[in-house]
Amino acid sequence: MAFQIPCKAPIAVPTGEIRDPHPPGSSAGRATGRSIENDYFSRTLPLLRALILFPGNRWLGQRRHLPLLPSSFSKLLGALLLTGILLASAFASPAEAAIGDLRPVALEKAQAKGFSLTRTDRRSGYTALTFYKTQPGNVPGAPARDLTVREFFDSSGRSVAVAWKGSLRPDLPSLLGDLYTHLPAVNHSPNRHRFFYQDANLVISSVGTSLVHAGAAWDPARLPSGLPPSRIRLAP
Amino acid sequence: MTVRQFGMGTLIAVLLTLAGCGGGSSSSSAPEATCTGGPPAGLASPGQYSLPVYESTCAQTINTPVVTLTICVPGSTSNCQEVPNILLDFGSTGLRLSHTLSIAGELPQETANGQPLTECYYFESGYNYGPVVSATVTLGTNHVTVPVQISNSLLSAPCGSLVSPSSSSAPFEPLYNGILGVLFPQYDNTSSSAIYLAGEQVWTPAQNETVQNPVYLLTNTSNNNGVLLSISTMVSETTGAPGFTGTLTFGAPTSGTTSLQTDTSGEITATYPSSGSTTAVPAFFDTGSNGFFIENPDNIPNCSGNLAGFFCGTAPSQSATLTGTGTNQSYTLTFAIDNAQTLLSTGNTVFSTLGGFQSGIFDAGFPAFLYRHNIGLSWTSTCSPTSSPGEGCFVIQ
Image (cartoon, rainbow over all chains, first blue to last red; front, side, top):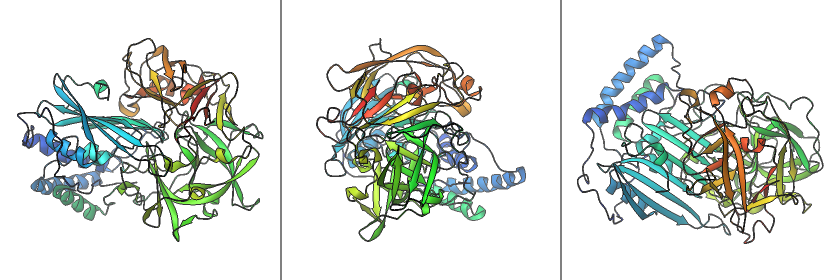
């Protein structure tokens, strides 16, 4: 891949609901806890970044961020990107999936994906909801497969992190929301059973064989102080 | 996509004629680099039921155990290719080959419902897409004919839009010529990692058209029920080694072993550190992970920059208690972690102490195989008492 503009299909917001025993009182229905400026940059910078990134360190399957363009071309690109920002900022729309979701929206989406809410943990600075899903094996004779997802919400009720584990593969577009577009379209990794990616607004770290998958993803710019990455896991 | 993204994406795409949206794999414009390495000098010959295993000679790989397989068009003894640098993978099921191999274009396509049969196979690092073909593979000195996936990252792949899409395409080139997945169960679509298509229709193929672990197809019943990887090379914990030699033996080991039975998700559990009161986490051994990917109870510093995701500190004398689902099945795994930056600066390619942080799991990756014990997979009836696919044993000898 030389360059890839990431984008994704719309995800329909379902109309069903799961009863949340501990709805965050003050945040439900509020569009965002961030300022317009912050929202503007967090939504445009990932696209800019994705345009100038290139897979780097192939030894380790990591990603090194190299600006590859000659300077004159960079300037042209910069001008075009600036134009793009100005145009794009005229078409703002709300976030549409998991990390970044408000809690009621996250609950609706989890139910639409067949998950049940199994546990709520209120902690200093954050609340974690645990969801569980099981489904029959995909071929006759195969055992049932399952997935547990734990989603972490800050004190404003907005999702900032998810962790998962199970024999079903996680649905990354649903879990990552807009951050899904940060992921590389092509990953030249020699590490078949490990995925790691990080930038200013997304860290995703996962491990799995063909039979079991476990991982965590978070927005490092939004983690509340009581929620270090080591706590982004299924165990309460 | 949102209107906003569409506006911006369209503008840039049109003006710069760059690639478009959708996670497709057809946007590559650079020529594909392939692995040019051959087997190392002095490599042992295969035994009747064994294969030599060596560190990959493809550029830019570390901790990558590989084998050489002879691949033939079924029914032919002359239309064959000896293919080095095929990853020996304890974490997946079935043989997959790069489309860049000359033999790949000779192997007959499987069909289903009158349409070509293709497959999306999902590794943690990303998906591989391509046709399912039939190949005769030489395991030791034995020939088995088996459905094989051809991974062709140049094809337009539907894998990003199927159920639970993977984030990325993960081409084999230039890092592998293929992947030999020897994990149970026999058929790759009994897990959620494989989706087949007949033409454009999602399809459940007949078992004899399903990509599968070729070891199951050996006819000798004492050799088709497991594998054992033995590596005798001494690897320095602080500097690594420039390579290794080992042996993959077909057949579940029968003596001097500790068997750790898995659940139907191929997982055992780990308590790490072994002396701690921490909650047990799922665990597995996997030759296809190039490090230990584990919790970090000792707060080992993480690397930043290019090495982010790995540990950049030292932690000697680690131990984890691994527990199977059977009665009294446990094994204490001792190991060490060293600084990834220091290790890689040696120029070596094999490291027993490379690792990185991962919450909620204990991935005993390839470094775990470098501590002078043999580690295998077994799917005997003892290891799969309920005959559930996905159930087996990790065996330590």
